[in-house]
Image (cartoon, rainbow over all chains, first blue to last red; front, side):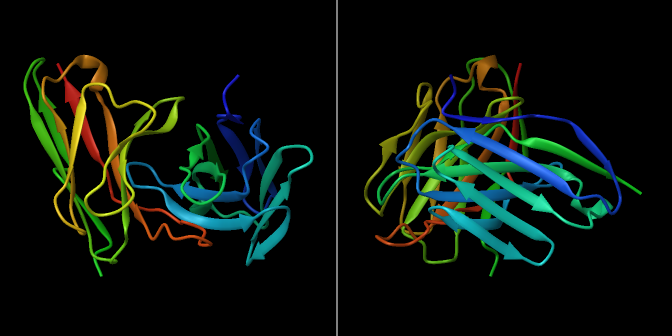
Length: 111
Length: 115
């Protein structure tokens, strides 16, 4: 079993839909959780960061962490064609540990 | 600020050839990283440098060497390229201090093909 699992997609939705992207993990020591967005042929860019459990909202994006279920989610409201990209989750334990990345979910938002 | 820059953007090598990928950051970050990204595998850590003067192996270090030239620059060397090293290589940097989120900032990547 991989340490971080993520459905690779592709996921296609119509413009304006609510998108739910998810990752599961096996290491209970993880406490920092990130979501990166990667456009085609570009480097990943940080979208959301959450420490420990709970929700965090930033504009149309909401990140949720459920440590008891070892499950994190990214919700995109009112999705736009410009949201079409690959979304990578990443997580790590405490200071001095390195991030572990999920394989990414490819999202297409159709006009 | 340019952020994290990488050169070259593209490279084609023949099996057995060597090359060095260059990375530089202008954010005064302590730590730098080299990843490779393959379809369905996500980003896998090759080597990292937690601070200037130190380097450590990541998940997939075989066939690679690194040099942390100074605080700004971190290079990745392939001594004898193999087709299995065909991939997209990303450099990243982060502050990496106790209590920080250790957010990583990525370069644009180098697409390497080994024939």
